[in-house]
Amino acid sequence: MRIALVGSTGQLGTELRARLGVAAVPLGHAHIELADASSVAAALERVGPSAVINAAAYNLVDQAEDEPAAAFAVNALGPRHLAMFCAKRDIPLVHISSDFVFGLDAQRNTPYVESDAPGPQSAYAVSKLAGEYFVQAHCRQHFVLRTCGLFGPTRTLGRGNFVETMLRLADEQGELRVVNDQRCTPTSTRDLATAIVRLLETDAYGLYHATNSGSATWHEFAVEIVHQARRNVPVRAITTVEFAAKARRPRYSVLDCRKLSRTLGFEFPTWQAALAAYLAARSARGELP
Image (cartoon, rainbow, N blue to C red; front, side, top):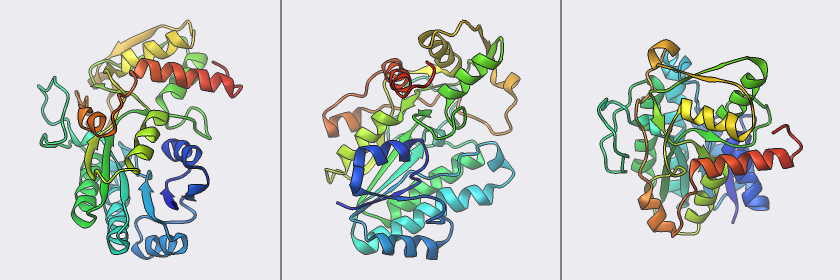
């Protein structure tokens, strides 16, 4: 199998490269421009893949409020270009989406299933939902996976990864201030990559929720990070209003992953266990715990 891996340098892309080995053909920003249909077609023609994984995204959630067209070009039109190529070649497309497609229901307190109506609240969220729709509309052989709060090995520590950010701030500051009224499920790229590789061995196409099990607020996640990493730093709970981000975030976006578990026959570990595994691997790489 020859798999074109779009977004190969990100957290998930890095994990997938390790899992797929020589089967993966990495395509970073230097190789493919998702917003440009001709660039997508040319890059994929050169690879000649038997499947495509799209792990790339415009994920500057607050900046997207000021440049929604840029977010839409990458997160919606990019997946559309990929889906049309895959449909023409009759090959599968794996596309990664987000829990941010939910959140409009302020009273929600039970995990979302795939058939629940979405309710995006930000320009970023709308662009991610549009990407889902384009993939589903244009490519019959699609796996669309909604996930949340990814953490995995990165080339630049402290950026794009909540765990690394909390560890860096714990070392730099005497106190952490973290939002405590947004509940979701932190997810390890290692576990998500496992699900993706297993899905590609099936023809069970469709929309799936894919996160670690359990749930936490970002404050609860931060508390567990400093506890497991043995940082003696207080973590103060603040509200979304106090944090004052430009884009609205879901207050509750926990995803029900039973459909994926039934399809693959395995259960995702808890997010606490996934965090422990991440920190252990981090230590094994010679990085400070």
